[in-house]
Length: 294
Length: 224
Image (cartoon, rainbow over all chains, first blue to last red; front, side, top):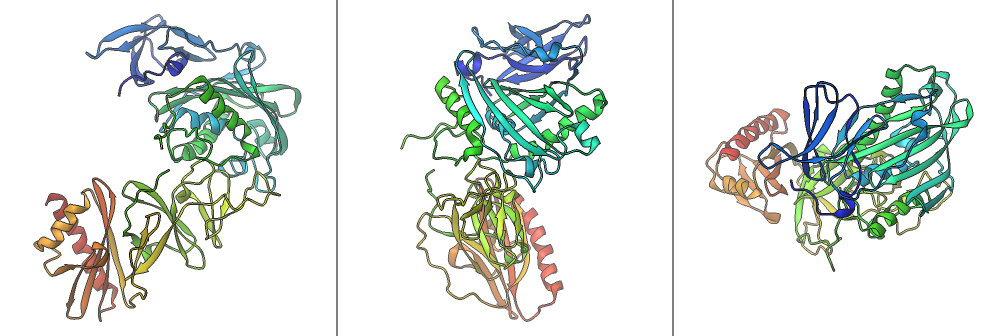
């Protein structure tokens, strides 16, 4: 495996571990964009990150940034900054560090699955969607040029059990979503809180592409829920993600095709259309299917 | 995507293996296929990829005579046409939304498909009755090695196999018993053999005996 030469992919802050993953006094080897890296944790808890050299020893040191319960690093010299997410600092929220899940899939298939609502009734049957109400109503998508992010708003979907608290109380409701793609490998959503119309839960997905076809997904969240235990919150999130993993590992081609004729979108897919156009516009090559010239 | 498959009939499995209302993944020459069967018994061989977002159709579920993709529930009729898209219940899906399908035929208890864009290679117009399934064996060798083993006639399967149409093999008749072996190339290092037999002895034990010999043959082939 060799590191990518795609400057668009290299100049991103990418998750490489979750807070608490590396035990003080130990180190953890992983990979990012084809580059082997090592995160080492000193006995006092401070972590450092290095490329792993060809001899197996430490190579170039990489910067580490701790945000949203995640450690981020970058291989680039001018990485795109990730935005603030104020919800993580709000005192009355539960901040859940849902650890990580590995999967064999392209990072962009993972982002598109996160943005997609049309699969709720099938992949997350009786939790995030039911067979009685499968329609995806028209929603808005935009490329917010000032921050260079893709947003989808006015998203609504009827859900039998949209969260741990909703599941317990047995109430189905229409859940309102806003989706926000913050970088090619980072996406988050805001969703209505059960019983609270004013504020939203914030659920993030940070993707570490080890290679073009193998990733680690981190899903930290900052939610309003004073009823559930942390175990219940994490179990709910992991159940949802493991249901998605079955799909993500079985999409073909593995790399994301950008030619419009390769896959057929419908109106429910406008967020993925915007995402693909955005990737094409920024010149992303990593993780993208390169079509042979005719 | 270019279709550069050769014009030849390849076996994808034993007819008895494909239960009604089921869907199966099969790989031929590195290419993924979804082989599924409606409740009416008709077998379809499609590219293993939903045209929506590429989810493998072999994971789909069959109800009645249609196949539903596991990801977004797009439903496809036996002719490959999409009949419903649950995200848009009032939409009549346009005819352009369809799966890539390949011609398929059954012969001597084995299901064959031809993946060429314009298959002209002939296929017997009449199937033969009386062929019983024995078993399929999956091997970690290229198909060439299996062919060499069969033609060498040295191992537990014995001599007496001749090449038939579609580059398959049959032996016999030997006391009225015939064995047909069809070879499926999976990729450069893997293949499968699908074996059926016909004969006066319709007792399942005769087929089980042959099935056990095939498992022994696999060990011999992989060491050949």
